[in-house]
Length: 151
Image (cartoon, rainbow, N blue to C red):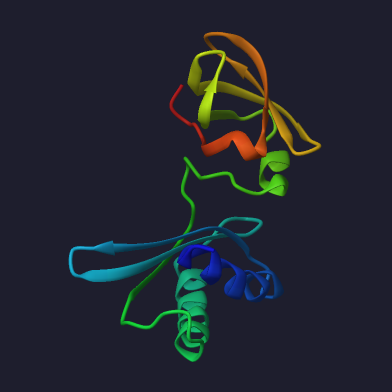
């Protein structure tokens, strides 16, 4: 399990209990510092005060755990307009939206897809790609998906 997944497993129940969706967790070395970047969302959107409140809470939980052995920078923010989609609930929430998707391996010689998210069920999504029509793609075959606002 990656460090980001460990952090997500630790913090997701806390986020849910407080009424937030834990959209994404990133853990990376940037220059000389380790950074924990957490994206949260909630109905009605996320305000700066939400980020501040969850930063204090998440920081205390992370400091009290032994997941992170060295110092780190904690950043909490909203997922923004081009939010990442990872969980089935998020895909279902964004059915009808435009998405940009990248697969792990090519599907019909294509790894990059752009189009409308048509459906999400049984561990698969359906996308109407603007170039090559409709594809059904398993979650396991997806490398990355973002909601696309610019087309």
